[in-house]
Length: 305
Image 1 (cartoon, helix red, strand yellow):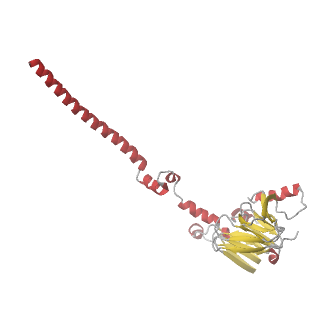
Image 2 (tube, one colour):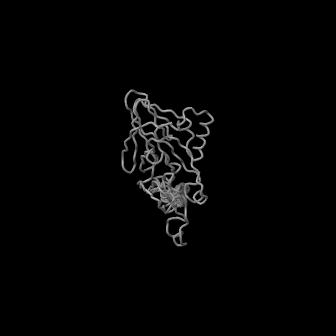
Image 3 (cartoon, rainbow, N blue to C red):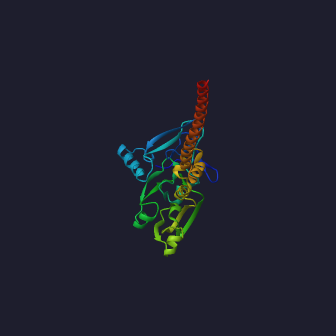
């Protein structure tokens, strides 16, 4: 099945969104939850599979959708179609900051291998499947595991990368990259990993124990800010769970914990109770003495009279 021809426009710089223009009857497929907005006559339907094989039976659809589940994606994909008489638009964006890479599949050999969560949307007719990493080292230590995602087709496809996008053209060359910075590469590229040289570099270089090696002739897409790196930074600087539960917010709660807010409150309550009891006892004793003196004086005066 040949892919449908779609037009598009990308908006934004650091947090991009792609707006796809559909002619009447055209369809674009996308990951579940990727849609941002759409025109009036755009309809959408969740389907099992990518729709690249229109005459595929139920078992074929189940098998194709099951392969997507292996990569960690949803069992269903959303199909957006133009049911109107004029051109209509629908927009898509990724769930975290980054850039969108438009790829004309016909210009790169009609095939692209990318990381599991990179795919965003594509023209109807694009086939999504899985690509097994044949290298044991790359599978265990490459950051993406044994299973990558494969796109096939001759239309437009859009993948998402964290931060800025770097496109590298290799001509029988080798490129070493951080394992998390790899987004996608064409089939002419051989992907493997190598161990960082030197114990000091391993433990104190901050680059990890392994680097990805990409060798051959083809196209490589890299990202400057992998989502895993961003998530690690956020977790490192997140306040403690106990601080966020304190009254006054996480910051004030943290200060309260720092100065022993809970213990201080308890101690203050105990001390206040003790002081109040002492003061109450003193006041009661004084009042009792005064009353006793007055009563004794009155009684003595009466008896003497």
